[in-house]
Amino acid sequence: MKLTKYDWASIGIVVLLFVVSFYLYPSLPEEIPTHWNAEGKVDGYGSKEMIFLFPVISFLIYGLFLVLPKIAVFKKNIRDFKHLESMKFMLVIMFAFLFLATVLAITNYYNRIILMILPIIGLLFFYLGYIMPAMKRNFFIGIRTPWTLADDFVWKQTHALGGKLFMILGILFFLLIFIDPQYLVYLILIKVIGVVVILFSYSYWVWHKQGKKHM
Image 1 (cartoon, rainbow, N blue to C red):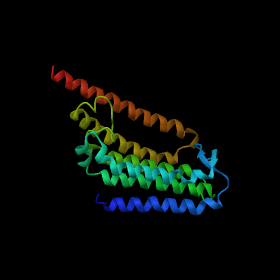
Image 2 (cartoon, helix red, strand yellow):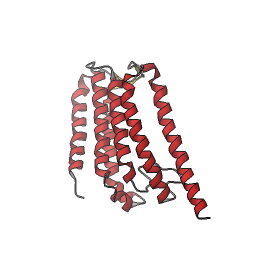
Image 3 (cartoon, helix red, strand yellow):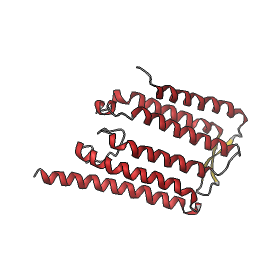
Image 4 (cartoon, rainbow, N blue to C red):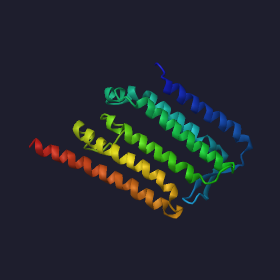
């Protein structure tokens, strides 16, 4: 298996996350913050072993994407997806930034964690929206409804709309940093659920419309 520049970059980041985790581990208290509310206040604690959570998740995600072209049902569609390598790298980058935000909050260098996380999530949604139209039908990545998985045309149309909506959603996540924290959870839920409902309904509508054409 030939490793690309994205592979080497991803491996380097994952290794760095583990190194930082092992370095910080001895100096951490037995319990560390693991969850923050919308106002940035700690409302959950866990054992200090949780510091390894982000490195482990990053490693598992990288590993999954590494073997995906071999285990996927639509292997050719996965292999032909030109953004697969950069997508894998972007997901690792996202977890690296989430790890950084968490470490800064745990060590009290910066406790407004929500202001760091929202732009990261926004960037991810915008990027996913940008690459979404290029995704081909598969069971692992993309908008997987019963109707997109059943038909290539429905998949293509749904992902064309999904790409636009995800990019808009990404921009809206950036703008959330200016919103009163007490409204954040509700606004995030409304936006995400709204996009899910629109895409789910749209995929059915396209499929139903296609079915009528062939009647």
